[in-house]
Image (cartoon, rainbow, N blue to C red; front, top):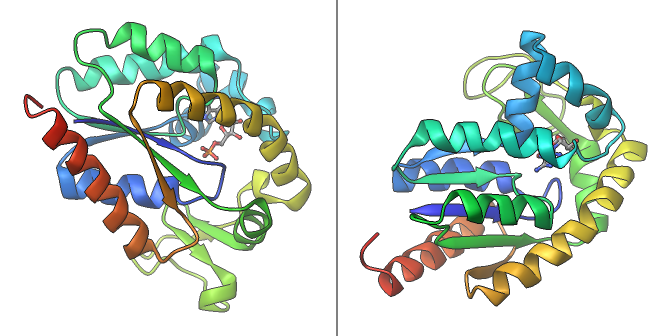
Amino acid sequence: MRIVMLGLAGAGKGTQSQILKDELSLSLLSSGDLFRHHQNEGTELGMLAKNYMKNGQLVPDEITINMILDGVNDVGSGGFVLDGFPRTLSQAEALDKALTHDPIDCVVYIRVNEGELLIRLTDRLICRSCGAPYSKRILGPIKDCGKCGGQLYKREDDKPEVVKKRFKAQLPGLHQLVSYYSGQSKLVEVNGDQSVAEVSREALQASSEMMVGNPSK
Ligand code: AMP
């Protein structure tokens, strides 16, 4: 099964992708995590992406598409969840072209209003080791990750001024992708204002309904 997660930054794509990956035994490819990994390793790709990310802009399509298609190739014929890719129409078209024989089955769009997302992102801390997100608002003054004990940090691009730029950079592509995947009858919209459990229940149900419609998967 091949799933794409759509939604603005902070909508919960990362958390839900992890749940779908575990529940459905899929591989997980996150474009943001891959870019951050390349930056930590000091690769050329990481250096290329760094300034775009710091300023809340999208990394150019060519760089992003090559990185993700390499990851998709590594997964081979297995199923996967894509978190954060595609974010533009060109990226979606490149993905479809690369997957002609085994296309995307389901696109889960997690919809949350921008006001709530701004609060979520400027409030969140991330674990440096496992990437788990934490809300200071909900958990109070926490220092370490409850899952792996890793150190929590504030992402540089989660500052309010950068978050607003990220929304501005991501919204046009998101609208185009919603129409693109609706046109392919693959889009399922989930209300992301609900609890994590409620969102994942709906996302899992939607993916299994797509499987029923396509039993060869
Ligand atoms: P994320 O971790 O998904 O919030 O992504 C962090 C940053 O990585 C984004 O603000 C972009 O600068 C970059 N990025 C991630 N995915 C993409 C993509 N599909 N296309 C272009 N840039 C991306």
